[in-house]
Image (cartoon, rainbow, N blue to C red; front, side, top):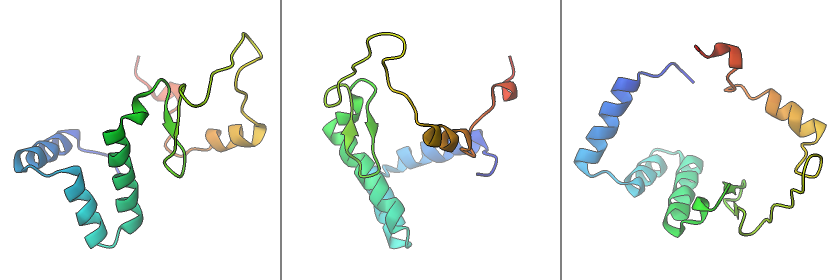
Length: 108
């Protein structure tokens, strides 16, 4: 991902709002220009926004846009050592996320 110009991003977002461009307009533009997979993902996010399911406590969406939340996946935490544990394989995947920011990269 290239470095972002936040000021220009905000200006562009404001222009879209001023012109009344909707999420559905974005989906149509993506599909029209051959980005069908991205258009489908944005459309699925818009559907979730309408249903409100993603607002549940700690809700996440899986790869098929099914909501996993405290409502349909009960938290069974009962103290140290009883909660969710990452497998070593999953932990290694997470550690190699290219967009991850190291704590040392933050200015404090």
